[in-house]
Every structure is written in C-alpha cells, then in structure tokens.
Amino acid sequence: MKKIFSAFLLLTFVLIFSQEKKPMFWNEIQEFKALDKKTPPPKNAILLVGSSSFTKWKNVSEYFPGKTIINRGFGGSRLTDLNYYADDLLNPYQPKQIIVYCGENDFADDANLRSDVVVDRFKMFYRKIREKFPHIEVDFISIKYSPSREKLWPQMKEANKKIAKFMKKEKNADYIDITKTMNDANGNVRKDLFVEDMLHITPEGYRLWTEVMNPYMK
Image (cartoon, rainbow, N blue to C red; front, side, top):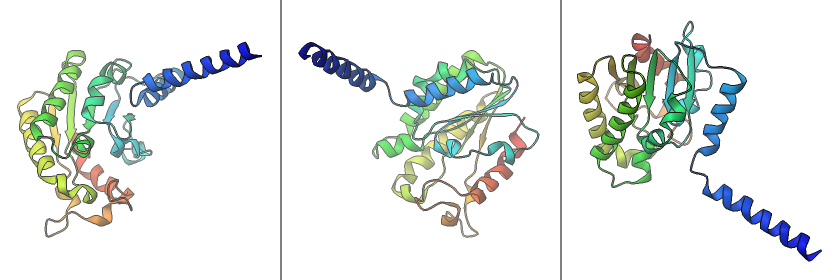
C-alpha cells in the first residue's frame, strides 16, 4: 500500500512539475494547433496575430464580409511571446496578408520599459515574418490608448511613432493608425468605446476599427 501511495505521489509531482515547466501561453498555442488539425486553415487568408484586442474579436469575420480571416490572437500576449511562438504562429499558414496588433502588454508588464525596446521586439517579429513570407502584405495596427493604462501612453505614443516610420519604409507594409477614430472631437480618447475594464473595446469600437482597416484589407 505504501509503495502504491508513494508511486501516486511521485506521479502527481511529475505532472505538476511538467505543467509548471510549460511556457506561458503554451495551452493557447496547443488550442490553435487543435483547431488547425480539426479544420485545415484556408490558403490566401488574412492572418491576425497579436493580443487580446484580436482574441476578443470573436466575430471578426462578420465585420469583413467577403474576406477570409484566421484569428490567432491570444490574450495577454506580448511581442516577446509572438517572437517565442513565431514558428507556431506562422508555419501552419499560407496567408496573403498578416495584420499584427501587439505591444500594449509589453508596456503593461514593465512601466519603465523604453519605447525602443518594444520597437525592436516588433522589428524582430517582422523579420521572422519576412523570412517566411518575403512578399505578402504585413500591417501593424497602432497601439491603442486604453484609459486604464493612461500612465503608459507616453511610451506607447513614442513606440507608435517609431513603428509607423519603420513600416512606411518597408515594401508591402503599412501602419494602420486607429488613434483618431477612437478620439472625440476634442482629441480625447472616447471612454465609451471601452468596456468596464477600460482596456478592451466594445462592438462600436471594433466597428470604428473596421472602417479604418477596410482600405488596407487585401
């Protein structure tokens, strides 16, 4: 009986230890793999990659009728996570366009993070995209100014400015600025476009994003 109990404890310890060793967002990536196994991803789709602003856009295809969209946003992710899982996020697909929304959580994790660090993280992911897809359209949606993260706006604005400059120099690349559409007539961020957490956006917010994004969609 003691041997059985000891074996049970050992097995429990191994299982717990193995779970602890899994990197952050490992489960989310496995879910993507399961989805792709169940339903092979379509070719020549628009691939969305990034954090929770994409994750929570569950009905994104309804906003872009006639477009084939693969949504691979995973909530809480940072550009460091996109780089870590780059192979898993890119290799299974043959898209005609990739749109990235990420960077907000990088600043949220470290309030003292310099904008240059986030810009370099994006450039690294952009290079990974280009290694696999040299000629497709790649776009970056500007980091939104969530009211709950107002203290981080200065770094975010600087990062947006630098990423916009970088993307404008690249071929088959664009910077999609959703800043103005989320502001009121006085240039202030519209809090009514955010849900209670003042971080994630409402359906109306997504509708406004759609208006800005549509001209860039291939």
